[in-house]
Image (cartoon, rainbow, N blue to C red; front, side):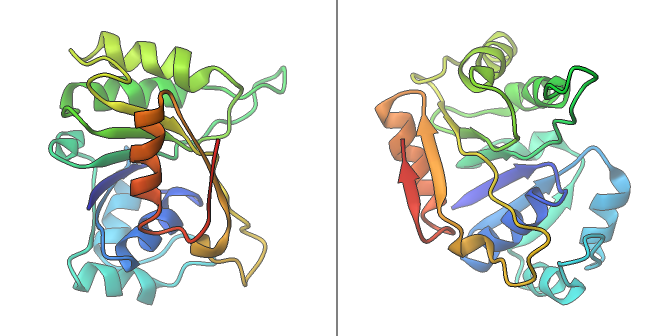
Length: 195
């Protein structure tokens, strides 16, 4: 299984490590060159993630980081974990999600899963993100590529929190999309809750 995880913050980096530990080949993508460089040197910038954990997956050639979005080509899945800070009306700012959709669209292959994990309001995946990807690629969601939403499940204040053991809700645009999402996430997460 080969996966690209977009956004290497407090959600994306632990998820990337969990997939890598589970045997997947993971490319972490981020627009922040400093984060990419730190990972490729085996360094952590997140308090509860050890440098050793990163170095171990780098050394096993299961994890790499890049700012080059063309590395999406040929991967089984693209998981989006970008920030959605609250705006002045206390609503999630989805501009990072939409920008990511534009960046990944040209490199998607038929059959690829695109899963959004970023915290957002209902409709973001099947309306906003879907429209951006379809209009910037020649692919149709649910036909040419699989589209899913699986809300991030992180517990950064809990030192005993392990990504693999937190039950994960997964929803797909179509039954086939859900099937693909379950197949991908089940590699790294022990309990999935399909919806």
